[in-house]
Image (cartoon, rainbow, N blue to C red; front, side, top):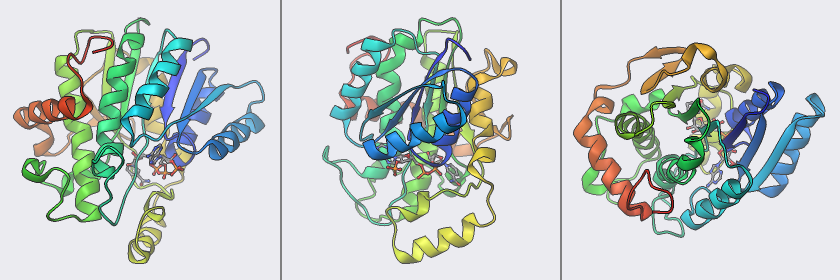
Length: 288
Ligand SMILES: NC(=O)c1ccc[n+]([C@@H]2O[C@H](COP(=O)([O-])OP(=O)(O)OC[C@H]3O[C@@H](n4cnc5c(N)ncnc54)[C@H](OP(=O)(O)O)[C@@H]3O)[C@@H](O)[C@H]2O)c1
């Protein structure tokens, strides 16, 4: 990975940090994105303890705020004309329905719209290397919903943390497959990952005490983040997957996702809604 530039969102903890660490260890320049500058500093220090010459940069961004995503993307583009790997990893789980500053439900905004918008903004820079890879972190939680709730995407009438999370993870797959179908560039691949059940703090951050307890019990049978990040690192680095695109990976192998995730009409509808919500005219045209 020497000479390659990788962008990892949500790199201050859990799977994102492990991914950043592993990519840096393999020699890549890694741009870590996170919403908390102190955590970003610690994240880089911890990587440098293991690899003192790691090439790292931390950029602060709240992935739930579109203006901040646009600002960080323009900072990245100004400095790194070529991006080899984009790992859309930042994710969140909320017990309560919270609207963000853009008026959008936070889980949908962070877990799906941020992937959609950041990929659009960085797309011109991904066009430059001869082998560029987009990796979206999904989850088998998407099996828990039968489809997108298009009548009420932000779940204003019937919010539940599990439903909101599962729907956002279904959106990751619909987006991955639709991007694969639409993208004009063969040399850019896009795949989605199921990391498995991983011992991270995702279920402890914005959750009720009951959901925290449930997550503590559930994650105790999970794997460590280094093990959980294996498939996303594999997709970012392995020669074996060069040119492979539009797939769902688990344990470094492609596998089937839910029936709902292959619904092309739903994928096209979600694409158009996301495009409108992000104010994008032409997805593959810079600046639009
Ligand atoms: N853990 C599992 O079992 C599991 C299973 C399947 C899929 N996943 C997926 O894996 C990905 C990583 O999750 P994780 O388990 O590693 O959890 P995590 O340790 O909580 O990491 C999530 C990362 O996203 C960041 N983030 C959350 N909201 C953000 C925002 N608004 N702006 C910027 N950054 C934000 C977090 O920052 P803070 O540290 O500031 O919160 C953190 O760096 C997620 O997409 C999740 O859905 C996890």
